[in-house]
Image 1 (cartoon, rainbow, N blue to C red):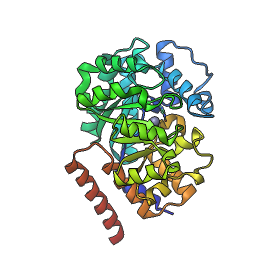
Image 2: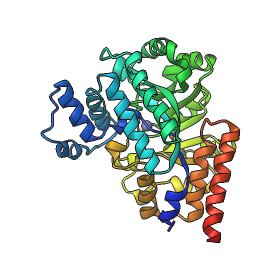
Image 3: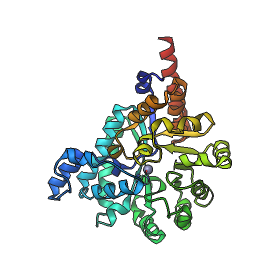
Length: 339
Ligand code: HPA
Ligand SMILES: [Zn+2]
C-alpha cells in the first residue's frame, strides 16, 4: 500500500480534464441564480444526488445541461479559477485541459467570451499559484466533421492559446475515422493531437486514432488491453494513455475499482497516467483518484512514483521542463528516504 503522505509531496501533471466537468454543484447553483435560469433540481444537494450514471451517454446528458449556466466571461473565469485552486491543493503543477467550444458556440456564446475568462484565470494561476496550463480544443464527436471544421476556423484568433486538438463526447458509433480531415487541418496548423478512444469503444478505435488521426496520445484507452498487438505497439511507441479511474467506475467502464487494469498496464510497460476527467461529476480530483486506486488495488510506492513521473513524460511540456520536474520528483523521493 503506497504512502498517502508521499502522494501529497509528489508534483503531478493532469493530462485529461474537461474544464466543463469541473463545474461544482455550488457554482452551478449560484450561476443559475445569477442568470435567472431554472434548474431541474431543488437544492445544491439535489444536484450532487443526480450524479448516478449508467454509461457515458447518461453522464453526457447531465454534463451538457450543467454547462448551460455558463453565460458570461466571469462565469468562465470562476470555473477555471476554482479548478486551478484545487490543482494547488493536490500539488498538480501543470495541467493540459480540454475545452468543448461547440457546447458554448451552439448556445450563441463565442470564443471571445469563454476564452477571455479562461485565459484571465490561467494568467492569474501562473502568477499567483505557479501552475502552468495548456489548452486543448476538443471537438464533439456526436456532431459532424463539418461542424468541427467550422469550429477550428472560428478559433482562428485564439490559435496561440491552444497546444492541441482533441475528440470527446459519445464514442460508440462516432469512430475516429469520421474526423480525418479536421485532424489533418489541425496538424497542418501545428497543433498536437489527442482523442478519446477505447473508453467504451473497441481497440479498433484506438488503432484508428493512432493511424488515421495520428494522435500523440490516447484519452482513456483502457480497452486496449483486449488487443495484444495494440498493447505491444503502445508500449514500443511510448504512446501515453490518460486513464481516469473514478470516471471509469462512475460510467461503468469497470464494475469495481478492484478490477481496474491501470496497474497491469503500468507493469506491462505502458505510459499510463492518472487523471480526473470530470471531477465534479465523478467524485474526485487528482489525488482522490490516486487514493481510490490505492484503496482498491494497494499500489506500491514505486508504482505511485512512476505514475507521477509518467504524468510529465506524457505531457506536451518542453523536454527541459519535463526533466526539471522529473528530477524534482527524484529529490522528493530521496529526501523522504534519507529523512
Ligand atoms: O470521459 C469522457 N468521454 C467522452 N466525452 C467526454 N466529455 C467529457 N468527459 C468525457
Ligand atoms: Zn474525458
